[in-house]
Length: 445
Ligand SMILES: Cc1cc2nc3c(=O)[nH]c(=O)nc-3n(C[C@H](O)[C@H](O)[C@H](O)COP(=O)(O)OP(=O)(O)OC[C@H]3O[C@@H](n4cnc5c(N)ncnc54)[C@H](O)[C@@H]3O)c2cc1C
Image 1 (spheres, rainbow, N blue to C red):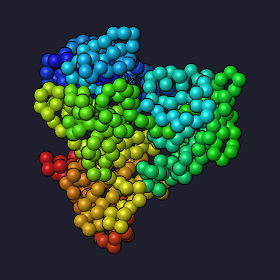
Image 2 (cartoon, rainbow, N blue to C red):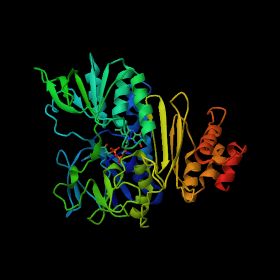
Image 3 (cartoon, helix red, strand yellow):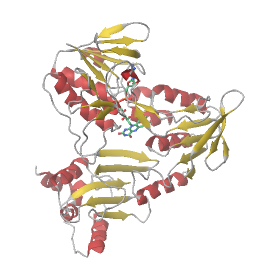
Image 4 (tube, helix red, strand yellow):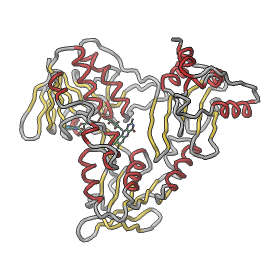
């Protein structure tokens, strides 16, 4: 059997690796962007000089041959589902028995006047990184449009080279559709403290090109004209559905897939950023464009491709990022606003740069989610507490188990317990069992 995978990102490559572990099937991975898989999440670190591009490639070039994974650097132009062939740019075509679409995301461009000017860029691909590098030369000011994870990374990248940045954010506070008010305000402060010209409640209206076709300024919804030679478009991403054209593959926001990650055409599957689940789990999104999604879907799909149909279950949500110098981790469900039945226990360090938030059910006491800023908790411990429906008080008494090595990570359990006691009138005490022994006890090992 020949399995063809389009896309050599985390989703496509994880699938290929797991199919090889399970079978002797012929595997071909086709991707137009780069010859080898690289970590897209490390894009900013290449620009900032923390890493060389080669360091973002987790496998040595010989790995692919050794594991009999054929790599082809080419753009797929079209899929002929009747003939089971993919058509490549340049005229070549390839037959498949099973096809996996792992084509990732594209940056959203909303049809702004002037968006085709030179110096207007998204930030998703290796080619985008190269263009940003090119446009950085002699840059006097960059404008970044869109307050999400990629936008703040792009702002930080320019800031690291002392290039002045204006950051346009449509909302009244950074990423406040995802972050509760206090955390969102913390990030606003961090952005401003780094000298970035943050403009909240401000939208891009128009991009103004100069006589040479390169952007010379933007006009904002406030009517202001901001001179700049670069505009970063980071107003979210959407699944890359180009290859649906001319096929009967049903699409919504993404390629629509059932629980086996199969599209409407039998034998054609979609995973990672480009896939949309027909039936997402409660509290979860149908398109989850994050690294871990591709990583989790790959091994599940490999089982199905190798003859053991296996449904994909979304599991407990996890995400992490860095907002300038503040790390963020989230586990489970943490609504932006606490509900009457689902209060939040929230504590913030007096320095305003660290916080812990735990969402739990008032009636049952079950913890639902964690939101951590500037503090790290162990994923396996938090996930276990959420999945086991552990009572908030039991979590608080045993918080030490979630902490990393206290030698390196200061702990704030006493402060959190004190906040809980103040909020609820309880008199809870912290258990002093700590470290690995405590964690093993919690996990029942
Ligand atoms: C700057 C940046 C920072 C990020 N940071 C984080 C983070 O901190 N945490 C996190 O969880 N997620 C992060 N993400 C998101 C994460 O990188 C993606 O969710 C993940 O890479 C998606 O993997 P994928 O395999 O689905 O697709 P991709 O990695 O996008 O791979 C798809 C590949 O398919 C290729 N392709 C598409 N169409 C064709 C075609 N027709 N022919 C040939 N090849 C084709 C593309 O060129 C691409 O190489 C970040 C993304 C970006 C851009």
